[in-house]
Length: 159
Image (cartoon, rainbow, N blue to C red; front, top):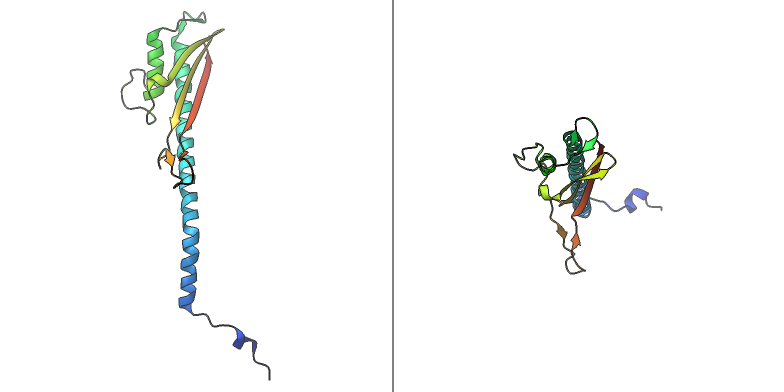
């Protein structure tokens, strides 16, 4: 006599299924957490880079406008205009009042130069530091991984 096929299958209880789901979650949770943190960090980096580019563009526009003399496209880039441009890039105003637009952004990292032929260049090299820390430990499997990166931004405007 042949046994029915449903009798040969092992019976699985709901409790055993809950255990399997727990193990699957334990395997998938670190990967999902890493993906969520990486997505948030990438968004934060892009936001800070966008802020930096806009600030440099505004600084170049201000320097190009303030450095002209009598509409002759002759550039007169004085130390006062350089300082005001640096303040504008760092704090968002020419007086330099208030905090920086980005963490650890200083006026010393802003370069305002006369590139010649009626052009002014404003450039910044900003070091981006992730929110999880600047170094990722490898737990003895080599040196720590440096997570900070340099975000350069340059704008050239015609006077």
